[in-house]
Amino acid sequence: EKAPETSAPAVEETTAFTGEKTVETLYAEDSKDMVVTTVTFEEGKPVDVKIDVKLEDGGTKREAVEAGNYVMKDQTATWSEQIDTLQKFIVENDFDLSKVTLSDEDGHTDAVSGVTIKIPAYLKGVEEALAQVK
Image (cartoon, rainbow, N blue to C red):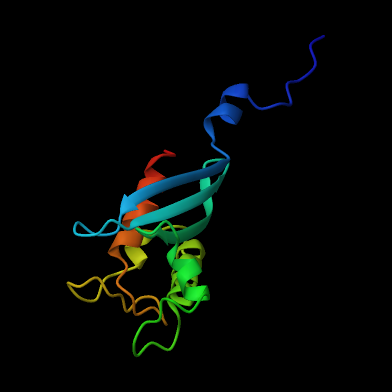
């Protein structure tokens, strides 16, 4: 008598990606800065995102903020704090980027409380990383 099969087919295990996908996208057409987006996947599902900007000088925007070299005028939160807030919002909304609505042509959002920076370049990076795991 044959034992009942208890394990799932091997095909399922190999199709669901677990790991990180990192993409670099140009911040803006007139910029040499690159947005670096890393999305972490578990079994094909995005579970975390990290966003930074690689600057023309080789450093990152996060490093510049921490060193006090990148200070935005009239902002209550630093660039890093706002990116962290945006990342958290994306994760909490299961990577449904349609929830990160833009409120003006410049690329600001009212959907994410505390985020006043322009975000289209960051959303594009997340989209491209997500597109690598379908």
